Image (cartoon, rainbow, N blue to C red):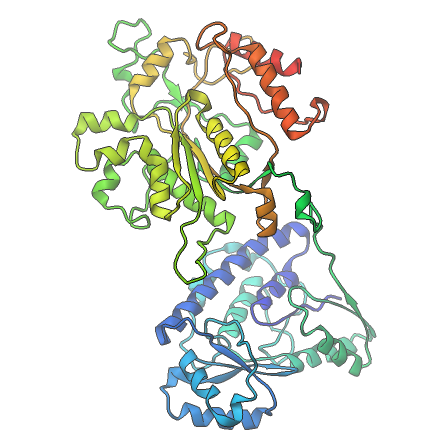
Amino acid sequence: MLFPVGFGAGLIAAAVAATASNAAAIVTLGLEAVAIAFRLAVDLQRTAKNIEDSDGTWARVVSGFNLEELEQRLAKVNETVRPLHRAYIGQVLPAGVVVFGPPSTLNALAQTPDIAQAIASPPAPSRCALYCSHLPPVDAAQIMGVSPSLDAHTVQRPVHAAHSLAGSLPVRTLGELLRLVVAGIAHKPMRIDETVRAVAVALQATDRSDVVLTTVGSTWDASEVHSIFQQHGQDVHVLELPLCPKPFGDDVGSIPPDAIAVVGMSGRFPDSDTLDEFWRLLETGTTTHQEIPPSRFSVDDFYGPSRSKHNALLARHGCFIKKPGDFDHRLFNISPREALQMDPVQRMLLMTTYESLEMAGYGPAAAADGEQAPPRIATYFGQTTDDWKTINEQQGIDTHFLPGVNRGFASRRLCHYFQWAGGFYTIDTGCSSSATGLCLARDALVVGECDAAVVGGGTLLNAPEWFAGLSQGGFLSPTGACKTYSDRADGYCRGEGVAVVVLKRLADAVRAKDNVLAVLAGASRNCNAGAGSITYPGEDAQRALYRCVLRQAAVRPHDVDVVEMHGTETQAGDRVEMTAVRSV
């Protein structure tokens, strides 16, 4: 029988353990639990700031006093402060008591002669009020959010909380359990000894004398819990969960110096506003091509298969982002007037970069003297077309025309907003623009020109001119979707998108314990050296490039499992690319 026991924020994890019936449920419910824990932390932090706007600690560990003596001394200190500024006992631990309160009150407490010697140093790392019964109640409904799955899952095992001395929590669903947990963490003191004794008594009632104790997270209390179980006649075995293996062991020096880690990513894609939506689209093999929507331009005004119209379009289809205009201008300190003139590609670049940095766990580092040191983060952004410039010219040029539509300002906006000092580069090499940016960023990281790089690319199909030029040049399919590697291949279907990745040297990412999503083992670029047409792919050049990248990555051709092809969707281009890959 499993007896989940939770202390503090760990009680949220214990609630998931008491409910989940399989690994898939742990993942699903765990995501809900993380969101609840985050909202609870924000709410408690906000409450603490409203009481006292200070960066000091809200908790101090006091030892050498029994509870009654300590409560008497706290009462004397609290006589001189306002009700919300009172100090209180939040945790009763085996080796002492944790006193919570605003930093100013705890500092006053620390000046009390008989308590000063009993306060542990350094102070407990708490920046908000926890386990406090006299503070205003938290908004449990807002913290829980709206998730029908919480009340749809039944609690499978009894949960014991260090905030309740009445045995296991009397609940039926996970939603009910988490509501009690949220209230307990915010407003009820924590008494670990008494909770563990209640669990030991419950175990005695099962006539089981063998106990396996597994700790998740901090193990500081494992020995005390072990001792209490033994006092109740249980034979205790401590199970230590194996650590996740390190891919490079403890020797960071064994990592190749040119190995680059991807630590964050985000994007906006046709019919996909998130990476999860995009992945589901790829898994299902769903095509997103559609007729050019009126939100871009009226295709009937320009479509002319007979070419009788001026700048006639010979193709009517594309793949489009759902809501390219969505933008939180206040988040990026941009006025509504400037935001309207900005290329939507720039707006989406700001948002996807912000999301990528969140995934990467990025936080600006402060210099030793307390001043902010500009991080050496470089930006590389590939963009070939700027349809928004044409729209601005047609509708009227205004104050923010230059930074709003000039492609050079896309990567520059990132450095300006995030205050980076690693350089910014906007790249236009046609279809290979973002791939070229990736190569340049990798080279800069390897030689130490920057410490991290944000690399991306984007395009938005707002104007008919490029449709006209590409379709009349024979590049676009007049029948709709791409037909890659097919005898019916007749051109490609244009698509919108903005995508960003965050890169670091792999050794730096391992040292920082970053979540490494992928490793870039090699990257290179070349051209066909004038062989054939300027738009015709060169088979010899592609073959040489593939071999170069394989040498960089120290990978043999037969060890490659997947090759993501360009796929020009033309008879000539597809044949050249396939032949080049097969001949390596």
